[in-house]
Amino acid sequence: MKNTVAAYQKAFENYQPEGKVLDVYKYPSPVLKKVAKPILEFDDNLKELCLNMLHTMYHAPGIGLAAPQVGESIRLFVMDIDFNKDKVTNFDGTTESKLSNFNPLIFINPEITKSDEQVVHEEGCLSVPGVYEDVKRSAEITVKFQDWDGNSHTIDADKLLSVCIQHENDHLDGIIFLERLSMLKRNLLMKKYLKKKKKK
Ligand SMILES: [Zn+2]
Image: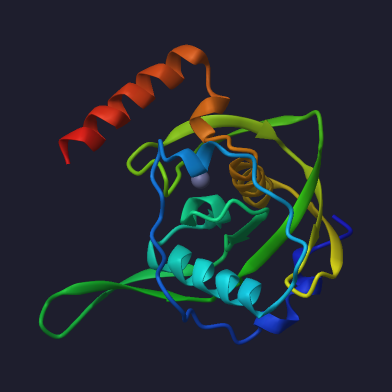
């Protein structure tokens, strides 16, 4: 791995989640099916959206969140595959999760080059709650993207980072991870999910 993510993340060294918790759109919301538009303006509104998306992701908690999942059809996703989630018991016996060791990543206008080798990894999605399934993805990828100031970066990714980037990037093309499964499995899982959703 020659290019790592650490290089462009200096701004987030002392990151603590803050901002708004945004509504996460659930499948089958139309915004999740749209091909998202490139981001051309790197202004304060974009930074605010990034911070709110990170906060929403940690609040869930999840390891990745794409802009279409919060109703914004633009090419942006946030991610953290490193943070710790510890269950803490309070004096009154209630428990809460305490998050630490944040390593937030922001990808804007990503372009992915994929390797031929494949890996299988279990995936889930904040837009399809309660559904987890093994998905086949490229083992290694190279991603070209911009940070929130508009600077370009290129990184190599493998393992969970690679899988997660491919999952989030699919959201920008209107693709949900279930669509990466065989037709049979997909239909079965979607039927089950929609039935459960209706009951709520
Ligand atoms: Zn997802």
